Image (cartoon, rainbow, N blue to C red; front, side, top):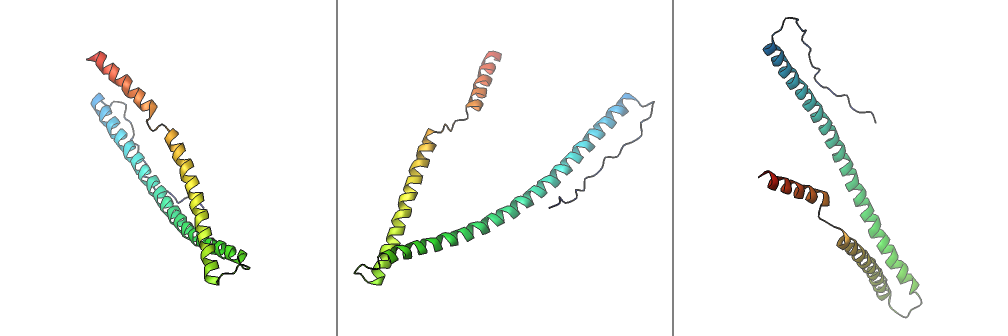
Length: 150
């Protein structure tokens, strides 16, 4: 996919005269710096708009993919429950009871898998240090420096 063309304002260059005074030069320098800043800000705005639209488009496609995956997951659960009920074909039970056992078995299986995942992730989170060590160290240094200065 080709990137869309960017329209950025090109800076205009004024011809330099040899006998310009110092205040005039500083004035031109200020104007040129402001023009450069405006150009950079225009470029930043264009880039941010392009990135935002790309993120929005990708987010929408992720949502569509998530919906399709959820439908597939639901169908897989139904198939698993019917598969378990098929294993009980020779049991002396009514068909609705076999289906119920199949769905309960599938539900218990997912509860077990979910519990294991939650336990493992809870353990990993408990091990993580949520304090930003470098920032805290920099703040301590700043505090010591301020105490010395005051």
